[in-house]
Picture: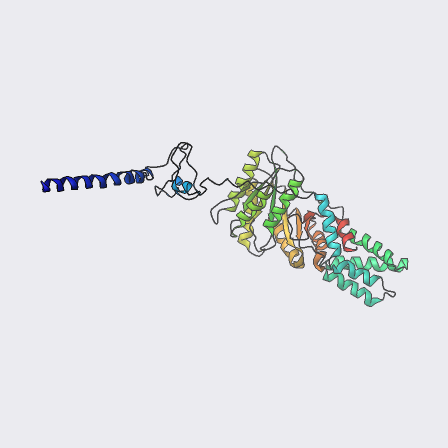
Length: 402
């Protein structure tokens, strides 16, 4: 009898233990599922992208389940499990109008330490102008990289005018210098950019130059100039040799809503990218396609030949309307030798002169135009995104003599 009671007691205890474990087991089953593949797009509980089988609603910070479903332990503890809102798209920048840039750049140049204008004014305003003064005038002009021929012409003209007029007041000297310097800079040259659609196709601009002069930055800044003029622009990242050049260009474009055609493969064929960029521009009916090219030394024949290839490939489907050579104004006569080589290879149509901050090297404007017959079309005077503006001969000289 006692044995029978003991057996019954063991059975009761066993049932009690099993009854207590069943809810625990069932609760554990509610929070696990086997991962059998991607869920349907409408499933409110997406699977972890890592493919671990963990459900997003079971992790901190995951999306809360729809109404009617069991809440997780985190919600019960007061932890916010709602999915964070997607970040808003950054607002596009609005480039400054071109007219405002000209005023600002002129003011910056006039305040800088320009040796050309100030030096000449100081020399020619002396009470006595003898041969030693004219020698200093020549030296000032040569140091400004105006060039030997232009220097001699300007000195001879100034010498004759001072002799004839017989007056050297600051006002007269400034007026005289202004006239002669404007003649040297040559306001008659066509400095407009060919950026109009023609024959049902966009205008195509190539930007070239040696390493380190800021071609990619110049393309980005020029895109802002064109956007400010309500042009529809597309960029081609054909600089495939410099690390991150394509991403840098795409970033410039994205700031003003301009798309960029680029390759994600290092060392891709630049001519192919240029071709695809122009093709996309034609298909999308944009106004202007600008192609950024890799920097290259002018004495490297293979690289220069490749640049010619890029232009020839583009011309299989569209004309190249502008080939802009980017030069650093501080390089002086070295910039002139660069321009000669690039002009022979791709027929330069215009110069973009950067770092023209009033240094003596600004005289390269005169030298390069006189040697190549190619106008300076754009100038840069700072690091800002809108510090690029069309070059104007009279504004440039007036800033020097301010």
